[in-house]
Image 1 (cartoon, rainbow, N blue to C red):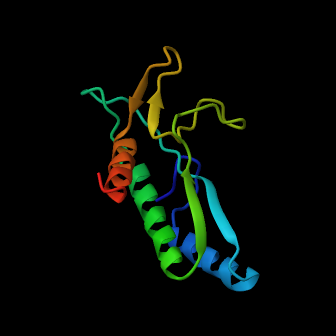
Image 2 (image 1 turned 180 degrees about the vertical axis):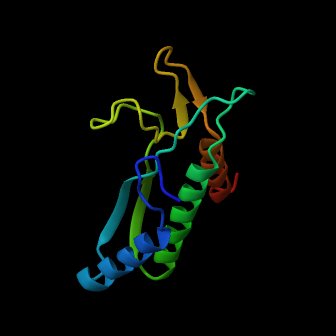
Length: 128
């Protein structure tokens, strides 16, 4: 599948690239920033946002990051893009990357299912 930006999804490419960086540059410290996907989200009848594509993208990329760690990559952080839907310079408010839906007219925020899944994963990894 392709994201709302027209980008393909292949978390294995990220994993393989991280391993190549480790091998070529002799294990540098790596931080992944702004890794995410845009989808045409809408508030559903029950008031929530069902975004299985974003959740799958996130989980696939976190799995790939864990595989890179297992391969010896010194991955220090993963920062998913983004906490909130926001203004994208080239696209305005049209592309939604957030784990939280923002109604731009009212500024009301609604945590998307992907955001709930990410929070659950973080809690589980901390033993809570």
